[in-house]
Image (cartoon, rainbow, N blue to C red):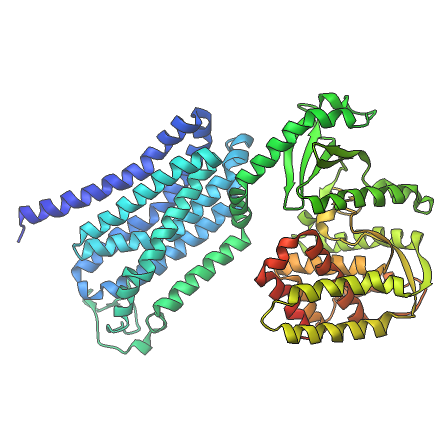
Length: 612
């Protein structure tokens, strides 16, 4: 029977929840306008409307769940789970499309919208995924007539979103609203998955499953009369119900979210958010020092006087250095300003200056020197070391790793260019104790130091001694070709022509040495490209090679060409070990924070030592 008092209580409380949802969605544009201005709201509102349309899928299908479940409440567990899967089949691919296509979608409305709103749209689109679980729970609560619980979820979301948006807007601009929305939805979804939905779907394991056969949208079997029948059946008859283990389900969801984040630009966006304040501090420091730096810069004939230059943008910021672009206002940047972020890193700046001076003075290199950076100024101001370099034109090689054809062209061009440096500067020598000191002793000491605190320190120490013995036996007293080597020849330090067929520059020479093994430059390039393409750590790549994984025919051809220099042949196993040893020790020396990262040490150092 229709009881008005019950209806009034149900509708009244549910209406309160609807007001919370309206507040969390409709107040955000007003908040953005008030705190960031009308222009910022224009860039915010378009991604917001696109994402709201995606979010409407979950509550709309949740309404269908309510209608179906009130007909047969005993099947609420099975219905809610299957509707959750069906919503995910719609929302997750559409969210992925928005994440990948955000710049192209927004560019329809203008380049400024694409520039300002791309990362915001990505965050908002991804927030639609945890919202699936929140919406499902609200529908379940309505079926169970626990509308107070639904209101609690919506009110919590409203408070979280508005509070976080208020503070993050001040810190990160409109990107902070996207972050607030994603964090709020994710926190509530994690709580519900670990409590209410977990208990609900665990109970579903004890319910009868549907028999296989023609079924409607919710999985019930359709009888010839059109009525839905629910025969008794074992759980084992249906894999979706048989595999409905809450812990495993939550793990699969989290794994899927991580894969989506890793396969898109979400992780870089979150990194940008995390480092926003630090980057702003770095820019402020560079801006403060700039008036005293500009007079020290040597004029260039093809650009206005350095006194007119301004900072264009921050291009790199890590614990080692800050890099900003400089140039005349409203023109393309023409120089890079590098600021050392800590006293130990000052030596890296001065080391690169010495290397570049020696390379520019080496007449054997001839016109190859056009690929080198040109230092315009290098000194200290207020105990802050800095270097200004002429900006080299070209496309960063990391952007040429998307397709196999582009990667192959990059490998050929990079191998030919760095090989020319090796050939022009190569000399043949007998490997002496002095060379072994640089090649082996110092890197091995760095490994001993960082592995001394590991749980398997004893095993690591024995592995390091075996590695040392193997490399000493392979290299000592051998007659080998040595030459100038870059020392960090990775895609991030290579600049290319637009078609990727030739190099226009090579940067970051602080690890270069005039008497290194030339094969190591090419080997590091191939290893680092595998890391990026395969999404694996260096330790994983090296371990696989040491355990017998081979090179592709294309890679082998490039290495055979590099090995044509005079001298004895070094075994590939020893070259891989030496390349890994020198690279990880250089990372530990340049960025000491890695020594304290147990996961990085285990995956990139301990994992390799275990197979030696």
